[in-house]
Image 1 (tube, rainbow, N blue to C red):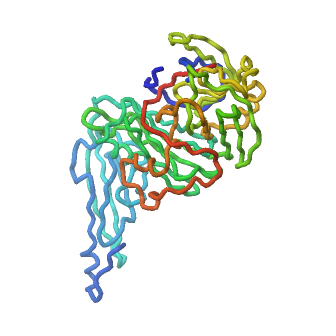
Image 2: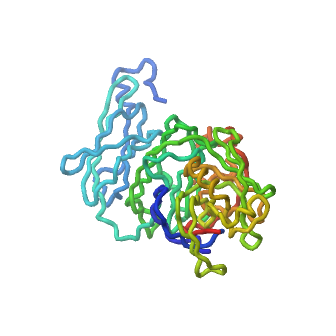
Image 3: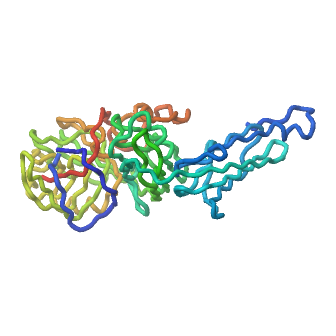
Length: 424
């Protein structure tokens, strides 16, 4: 099955019947005793872009470097006198416009810095943005939409077609922003082929957390051949804790809510010729009704299914399978999906959220990185090694997963996602 198809923007819905194609698989103070004017002499401000720079990308930020003080205000105005909103980075290295700049316009940045003595200095720089680029845009997809309630294992995922080359990943990652309330710091981690980058914290999100994401890539130079395609924003929240653990040895699914076992459900997993994947996955989509269409595969079939929940790009779903209820709990007969009874599937749809953790263990094959949102299928130590930027020291240790989620499966390396699909 081809899991490298072009991605389309993901929207979380539990909706009408779509057609699914595929197979079921410190400030420096003046020297003591110095003259009153000395503090002003020590206060130095350097800005970028340099004054009168032309052909600046519309993704530009106002770089601010200050010695002997700190930045107190930044104002950015275009050549029609309109102010641009924005905010500083947490590390104070730059001021980030809240939206992409416009092509072919001249902007003036005015930065005020205040020294230790309270004296201030103002510095300005004027620059002109480039005309609209004729380079090809890399297609990016933000798998995090606004006004949703996600599960505690929901990674922020951005996918790219084509993948981002290694030498360009730091620049791209620097334009990906995540804020959490209450704060729960995390980091980004790239798949080896650059097709996806995930953001998560060392531990699962706390229920009630608000997460705001910005993928600010429009106009960003990406290597020599490409630019970023769009600027996307979304804010959503984390709901209750739900996790599913499926054990091939017992053919049972254990459903945990708020870290308590609430139900066990008999399952039938993939038969020997089409085994299910073992690993830690995340619910990606939910459908009340859908159609699995595998015509063109080695095992073609078309079947309508109800209460289907996707957890891999390769086409593995939990779904109602009334035709296999006699096998559920004792024999694997599916094409890779987790078959459960119609009544159990209907109940489960009311319990789960996109972003809930699914752990499958004991099957014949291991989950491939990138076959779904696989951010949790590696240890924290391995995850942080995938960052293209330095990871803050406080995030480097490898804490234990502390919120009672079952299962912990290690993973390996990477196909790109592509919405193919499943049933059986």
